[in-house]
Length: 199
Length: 206
Image 1 (cartoon, helix red, strand yellow):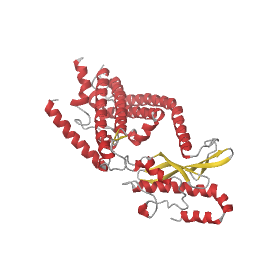
Image 2 (cartoon, helix red, strand yellow):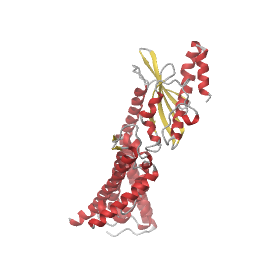
Image 3 (cartoon, one colour):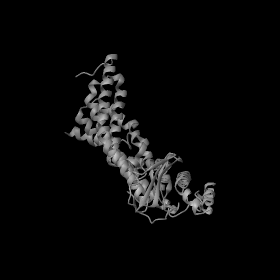
Image 4 (cartoon, one colour):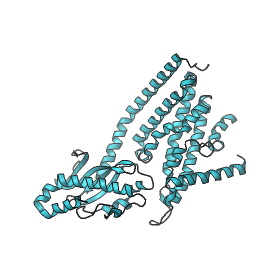
């Protein structure tokens, strides 16, 4: 049981996909402009990750090594399209906000990376736990970056305005350079915390 | 069970069978979500049309008309024309095409504009969805209101750091206005007086 718990917590702190593994940085930089976007993107990726990890783990013995990447991508692309269709049907507003970044989850190397590094070697249960942990870690990181950028760049917290209308927030933080700045600074903070608490 | 070896037969079999299973699953989800997606799209259309028009009692969705790629929804109340919503688009956005819904009053002035679909930069061009940007068009008649951003010598307050999006927005509205005037108002104003149509012309030549 302890080992399983390890698979789960692994993705949240010790091997956080964003701050430690630095996988799937494209959406991390591009989509994290508002809290809702960051959270929505994180959850969408987490669901895809869970479905893909479980499927890869089930099929692992039927996937010859030489075509494994092609098979993984087929599985991931299918899951992404399923999530995309479901979002389009039941959460059209969120789908509208995330737009092109949903189909781009297909090429998010976090999903492929976990299939390759974990799911194809481990059991179904362990793979599911790993996916949930990684997904939550990714969502947490995206939400954190989004919150910082939204507060500094838009003066609001989950669209609740924090500064009086008409005043000017630091627009830079909503722009791409702000994504790099926020990402780098949070990265440093995370490393400092990790060193301090020996995580 | 041992892992399958990478022989040609195994590879072909594995890849085709897994692809087939995936396609079947995807087809099923597509079928299940097709209805709700259409409903969501239609709901969006109705909401947008209702939002940009004054109260009406007909069904503009049923009476929509397509002219040169733009969709026109005419609204009547008690048989009298109260306005026309125009679904327009522009391809000049910073991230390509985006769609707008413009509500015109029968005299050709703007009632309200909402953004339907856009993929402009979040926090910049995407701000055009805010009422703080769109409200400046309220009650404006493009015949007298210069539909260009201030940088280009017009009267539109562009979104800061998003001039391209603001320009594209004006382009989309202008397109809607031109076609609306041409197809719905011109016949009426031609009778009403020549001054109106010259004003329309003046508005067209930027």
